[in-house]
View (cartoon, rainbow, N blue to C red):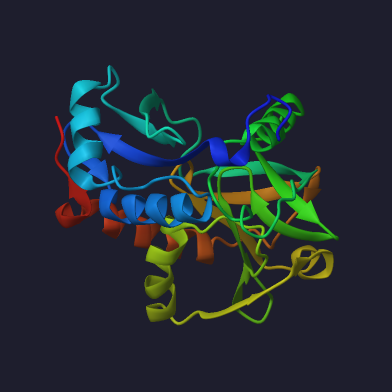
Length: 251
């Protein structure tokens, strides 16, 4: 149970990009992940479908023109909608390291109800003047507080975390084919201190941040200041944004 008293199995959630003009971005992908995570958390997912989610979004329209919408489903099948503005999007940032929360294997990797550890990690970063907390376990970066880290090594190989503690990233999976088509070789493994210290570039991707280039970790510079991977990821994400089939009209 988390510090705020919430059990991991108390709810499941996802956060999506929205625009009043275009609707909700990648809704089917988020619904599929909601169902998958709900199953792992033993939460009834019979009401998690596009029609139900869209009805709740229609019934609770945003005041913002664009931003992020969090859809949470409780263990009693209540659906709640929460909107918030973007904080950082598609820019260079600073990061800190923060101990990664650990969960049993059936909980790890899901977006669950005991999310306070991730919120505290983000607050820790902001309190130290940084933008993102990179979650670390056994001297390796596991995940970000709301994004997935990607390392480009000095041989031009892209590395992704293979930790079961990392949350499945919809953004990362959708830009992966674009990176491969751009000539990048992608490997999964431990994002350990040696790899990160010698990397050519470190970026992170996610619904909440878009693509961010991480220029420092704990006040230590990272990378060689070339933005090859950042530009490739940004281009890929922009192509996804520009494709109307990835948007579901709501309002």
